[in-house]
Image (cartoon, rainbow, N blue to C red; front, top):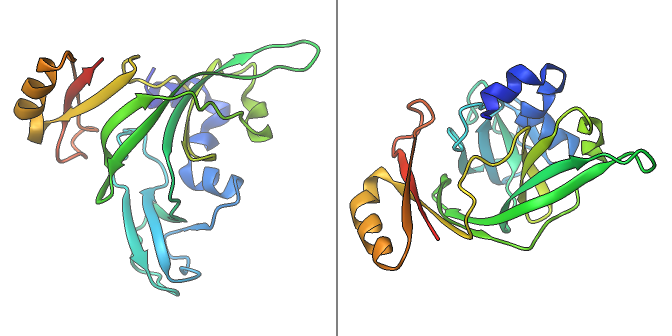
Length: 214
């Protein structure tokens, strides 16, 4: 299931696709385009909605206090969190006595490029499986699976479906710009190449060709 499919299926839960709403729900310093930056610092600038995925349009910028013009319409700013990036899958487990809860299934720790936050270098399976807070209880019994992205223990994205990436211990995205060199080198070391082209409908300049997995 893609985000666009989930958006059409779970019509009563579309607020979770609104990344500004998610940031506000968890109490982060954030605001839509036009709202003054409260203090000089580093911020993530992202589209409020992005059903194409791949982190399309996201940038990290230093913004000055009082700035009202650097964030384009349809985007929002949010405080920048330093820490480890995790992608965690969950399944709703019903319990007639306790009311049910979200059970963590799998977790991967990602490493991306500081100058391009949407371009990941690798994902490694991790034992870190954070428990979801009460904010997610309203989705129980209505949505079967969730994929939540965290910076350390802070949720930054919520998807009403599982991660679309292949289920391996080590996943290396292969981008168009490094396809030949990376594929040849890694296959020598026992990695399998899985074709999985994605460019977020043209919004990613350097398309992902697939994954090297092991």
